[in-house]
Length: 287
Image 1: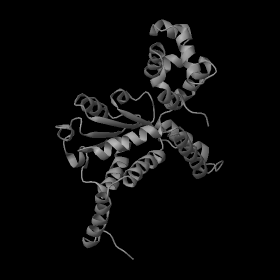
Image 2: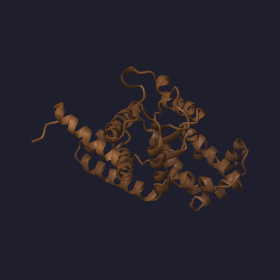
Image 3: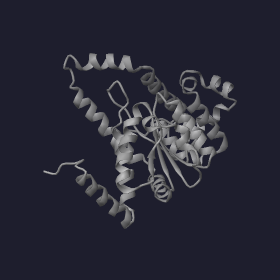
Image 4: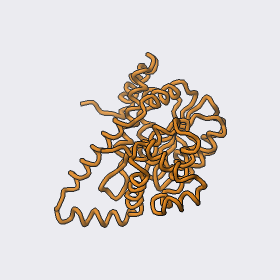
């Protein structure tokens, strides 16, 4: 499975020249135009030379701009196929038992996991864990479909740390969670299309306060990307009507695992204390 445009761009963006960055920015902000209009038209609208788009394609290991554009076309076709349409397609493909959904979904998830492990920036993961471990506060924010993943991340984190909190939990104000945060703190956001406007605005506000923003999304065109200090773009392909969160869960579990592996004895002692308290309170039942 070849790396996607978003993954290639994430890994190479820092090495691109100014003109190639401008071309990449135009594509991520205007994917439909880049995918469907002639290169000269794209060049005229963007003010960027056709040669820059061609050089960008080669810098990202495409044979030419036509190959890059074909990938964009296929991706747009998939995104235009909205949830209801995808649900109808899912019913059509699997109701007649032509293919078992469980097999198709398993295959997609396996490919997604393989792509993440192959393409993830492990140095960025190390940096993110280091910043989290040193943070005064770690604020977690997810919305819509990402809410459950962030809840799970909060549950895991609170076994080993006292300074992780959920933003906007149980009706709490998002502004109240962000107020007072600064360069000593971390905001970790999970958001995917359709993006939550609150999550996007929170990323912008947090950055303006000097907060270290960690973003987990599934596309390089996420508007919050420009506010993030580090970003992880996870594959979410699936025959499902909704984007898969399997790889996202894998990533947050990995993040916590790496954090605990590097933790002090105090953090490990806290895990034992939390576990004992849960037993005393009969929150868990041992057989």
